[in-house]
Length: 402
Image (tube, rainbow, N blue to C red; front, side):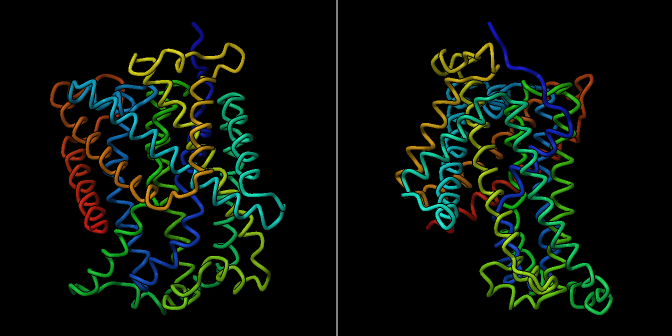
């Protein structure tokens, strides 16, 4: 029986991870966090990165222990020994990815209609057809395309840092304003910014679901997860510093496109290129979510939790074509329905619950096998901390829904 092809290197996995983590949302998020935390916004991003890091470290260790597709489902089964809970987690991850992809397809189609006059449903069908073709083409080819788009995304953020680099000349004057005092009021607004910033670091979990297509997976996949988080943190903090050093936070908060505003301020040019890069970020996210969902369906099928057809790998493309087709059809249907706002809100809760379960699973696994040979091992308190952090954010989301 044909299996998945191991072609993804460490650099490709880092770009894959950056592509799923750094989305178009950060272009608006900068203004929202600045509106909450003011000049303390860079601290909010740093603390959010630290909190996300505990769960990222858990994923880095557990994916090396069990380098399989449908990773979260495998981890939960290994930790709790429950097939039903494992299947539920796999389906939750798939649903979250497909809803996210459908929402991104809708957003991209809306942008595209400003350049190409197509009826909405034709535009959605066309975009889904392209996404399905790329995802089915081959993992090396589809990740290569995603990597190119990721380079463009990162290049857009670096372009904003470059045109705004003169703002760093005044950092000595602004630094006292940016250093939070030991007062409850200041740390309250910082932590409010943390709650919003945290979601900008979610995405590393998608990487584990292509584990069976990664070369030297026990080394490269954990390394890619940690590098993705480190690079994302550096980019976000640089962007946030340029933003608050260039424009007062209260003005950033009022702008619908704060980074475009910063770019225009420093370059004197129209921010059209930033808008185009934002479009690339949207479609890249949809592609990566589709690939991820298809690999979860494949992994669940390979473990006999879903129909066997979904784990059939095409001998030419070496991709699970039936699983990919199933994923893209669901994305198409969800995108055509269009009423995704409320459903999309629940996807963050789904992933946070999965984070809780994965952290607890690793804690349980580490008790039984504390130091496996040949992989990175982290202290046992880290997954427990990741669980507490994830549970806190679950509670915050539930409170917001009520």
